[in-house]
Image (tube, rainbow over all chains, first blue to last red; front, side, top):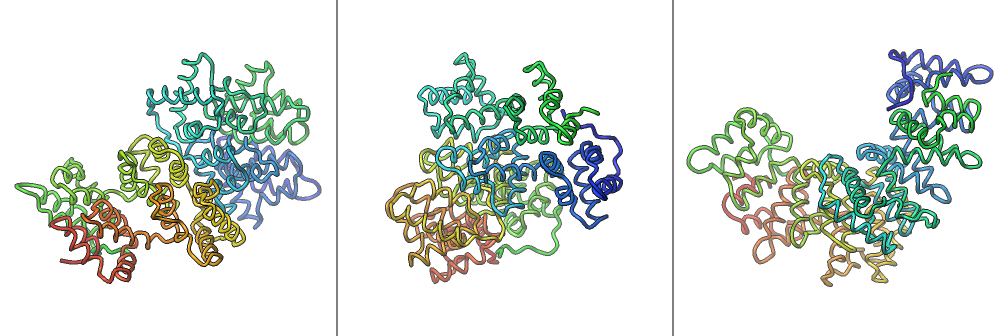
Length: 314
Length: 314
């Protein structure tokens, strides 16, 4: 369930006017910006952008970028975009880093639904005039490339039908590869990148039944091996995205120096989806409410904005 | 341009009635079936199926399957389906063969537009409750699998923008791999499966400029090596689909014993698209009109149907 709090009646014209007013004159009224945008869903934000453009012949996003700064600006920018377009931006930023952030690419390809991932690929092409997979392929190499290109190119079957015999045999295939430390075996990549999520869940369950331990536990994480870490992330994203997001939030906060990129990314991308359940998982796991932990680690308008997206009223 | 001849005004009800009449009583009136279905485009055929179903509570496709037989039945069945659904069937038949027909998979993934290929992937899932890439992966192995899964998973950028510097460097990459006989090099697969068709054409042109010979000529075809043959097919499909189809038609007719599967496939899938240009290429290359060659190699209703699709009136 979503955490954002959206009023029943919204006037896009009034919203556009309020945002214009917040941007005019000396200084910017960040609180006004948060109180509008922090309470509108994706479809409404799109209408507000259109209304703003029509009223003032100005791109709202560009105006906000020029008014705001730092983590707050980045969070507002990511929030205001269409979800698919936002993912395209996140993927592009991740892949163009001097040391590409594979985990963001994996997160986008494995936690979004097949149709959502497709929308991201469309948005990516519209924005960058390249396909997502071609940019991923051009910026990575070796086994990581094989895994990432296969994951972003997937258009998985999204139905309910499961083949239990196949789940059993592919659980064995995965276990054989892990036992032999052949983590980069092409069968491993094939299974993770082509099977439906329901089928993979059945496979991971059979793995646990047969081996008395989960596949994630069998993938050594401490090795620091880049490919192995990517593989673990993929399995966790496919198997239990909410649990995965809880972990990303936990790590982003626990670090010395908060990882604002990860914190913003998870809150912004999940606030309209399942952040409520992720918050519950966070509380269960850490015995501290997520908003309290976020409030402790952030400050100013950035903090106020994240808390608004998390459904906490001032 | 298309070759089928479609009247301006079509009544789906009358068509459904005519087809019902052709199927009733002693024997089937194949000529009537050809004269209706052979002159209707995909959207019209869909409406006729709906009208037939509504009028007679019977699936037109099933009825035709029970009335017709042999090559004619197969051709009518392929023709009556929606293009994306038809490709899904063609791909599934090709991949489930004891010795999978890689060329059909490559043809579908490389000659269809990115959006058309996506529609095929959707239709495949709706029909078979699996993704196309998962079935391709499950029925192939080794280098062929790498190539085929990458090609069917592609959602290429479909715009006009070309990077000429990149075309040059990737022409060199391809040439280096071919020179070293490293045809299965992952760079080769990456380039062919992720780059846009416009970009690939630029790359193949640079290859020809730099090497004074085309890439296809540099890929030895006579070796009988399965992967190399697949690679050649992919390059030809990407580079010049019409020329590729002309060659498939030529081979299907020239064989001792016509290859009806290939002949039907090309005529049925191209009759609404570019069969006119393919016919012109055929005539230029063989000095015999395509319809004459087809007429010589086929007979009966099958022949009459193919000729109708090719725009030849009795």
